[in-house]
Length: 462
Image (tube, rainbow, N blue to C red; front, side):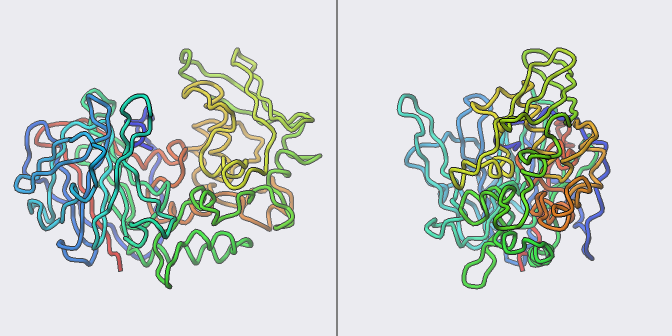
């Protein structure tokens, strides 16, 4: 997402944000804090139910100039953060700050961030997060922060309630300031963001309902699924306490969810992959086609029209009628488990094609678009897939696809139920390729001194 790759190239959305379900209302946006020239103020409002002296804040990211990973070293008297390159001997505990130690203003506390290529604000309840640094390259210094293994009881942070919010501040960027709410890996804390001066369709992003309500709504939705025994596993619990809600891809990687969920007729009496792809009379088996339109930027900007069909060897071959290169998906696989299966690739936003194609190429665009449509439940379809088709069909996301066989329509579901559980509550990324599905999650705008600031409100953790 944003914090991994920097600012996105997606234009501001004109798609209205769906009205969240439930009886709750978003909190007010924090008023402007005192400004400091050239620095991005971020107002942190604590509505968690815990006192400020039990809520920790940590800033990490990638620096503007060196592109190295950095800590936000915050002067607690002024709130000003300087970006400090990580060192092998570092631990995040040295850069974690209680809200109560930060300057109070605007109904919360404020920190000031210099330009940063991509950043994460970590919030943790009652405990500091403990993250070390490793060198991932034997030849050159390539230091990286080791993020918590949030599915492993052996991780020191496992029982800590924590979450993240993404942002970037880059004067050379377009937009110069961007931020989004993310649950691509997991959901644990309701975080509701605001960007003053946003030129995107919305100036708010994230979830604001109480944590207990969000978890109960997810559990209730999972319980309605014919395959509830799988979806229930996304609720990670310990001693009767719900620690976090895992994304489907992360649950598969941790061996908590069926790595062949989309291709396991033996367990579910139906295979989605067989229905659309590998079956003798599958939806896309020749002569049937998948129509698609993609825009590429590599080697140059162009828009190509594709028709894809499944060949006898179960490769899915897309050919262009207007000069685009042929794109071929390999035949689906069910091993090795858990991270070598086609199901894992789809839910984890990993391109079908290996080695991974260069971003912006036709192979990259065709694979991503097809996987995005699967996640949303739009495949199979006789309509032409495109980014505009995705954004104009949000109302049809995560519903039973009438083009599936009767068995497919009464089982599953075969879209991402995790995404449905959170998107019906508000604007938040839930999937690695979610930007084209939900462009309104990303807030963006120019940086203007004495005008631009962010707000992040922590919702109730009760």
